[in-house]
Length: 218
Image (cartoon, rainbow, N blue to C red; front, side):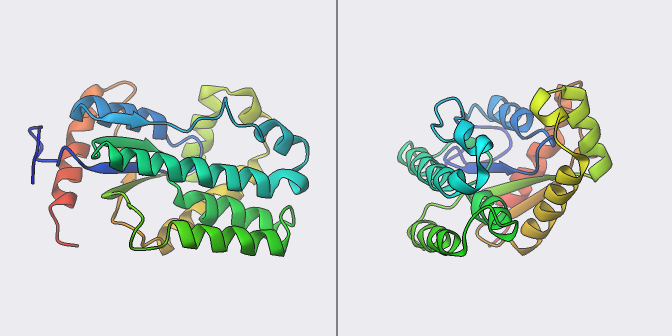
């Protein structure tokens, strides 16, 4: 197993960061990539042709948006493996079906037919032995109070205008999702156990945990 770092983490590894809004996925992605000299993979929202339409009419555009996300994330996953790995990825392809598409269906903003079509396509593309799953999914978790505090601190207008009930529901959905997730190995990290914004050195114990976790037999 080839390595290029002092932690013994394979240089071809693909590590995905998951968690609800406000847990610090982007910060973790950048910190891990810098420490390991890996590439980063971030979600592209500026070129999404459905996002604005979706916020104007959930029921009409939720299916289109989820199909777009599925296609883009699938292509990105394929690209990372064609590069022979060495990536830290911000947000996983699994969250779309396990959380967002499911939420739209259950709240009535996606029809049953569209939801079943989406799930069928997702399963055919992703939940197969041929799909290149990540070596590790790092799930960032914290209490609802801690996450709301972080959302308030970063002050993004769209997030500030969103009701606390929405964040509470999203927090619950993420916890349920990760407890049932089994597509690849999962390392759970509590956001109170490190502070990457103010202490760069706090990435070191995380890297040691990642290294130890990747060495465990599957």
